[in-house]
Image 1 (tube, one colour):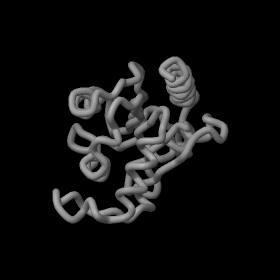
Image 2 (cartoon, helix red, strand yellow; image 1 turned 90 degrees about the horizontal axis):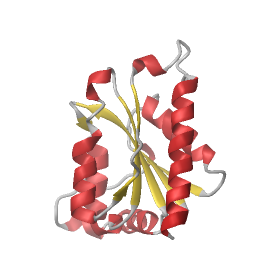
Image 3 (cartoon, one colour; image 1 turned 30 degrees about the horizontal axis):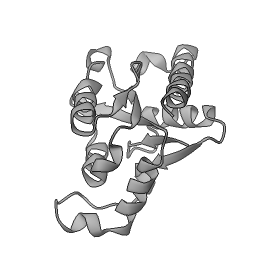
Image 4 (cartoon, one colour; image 1 turned 90 degrees about the vertical axis):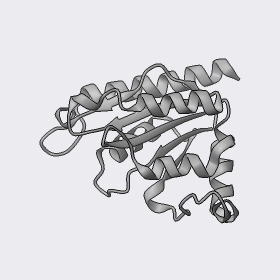
Length: 169
């Protein structure tokens, strides 16, 4: 099973649109988590871990063969909801195959995922898919839909996720 996580809290999010497209490409071999629709506690380093939803989130992450994370870029980093998820679910990320999908307003933030990637690699020994999808406003048509180039890159990311997860199993 593959897991696609959308971390945007904005209903009309471009990163969510890309996450749903990627999820559909897995052809029923995946689970989709949308953090906008999940009420989970803010990590306080204490009682937050007792919330039943945290165990469910940990289980979803633990059982995944690969994980694609979709997030908007704010202030040159992924959003707080995604960071909170990582804090709450911690060790369930250990040695997971992880890929990234992100969107931002301009090209200058394309390196933003790197601090998050480094954290997952160092803290949890995650294997990072060496291809990530970064989209800025030029990657979307006037009607708000993704252009063909972004669709192609998402298809390549999903294909790589499937290929690498099979090779690792």
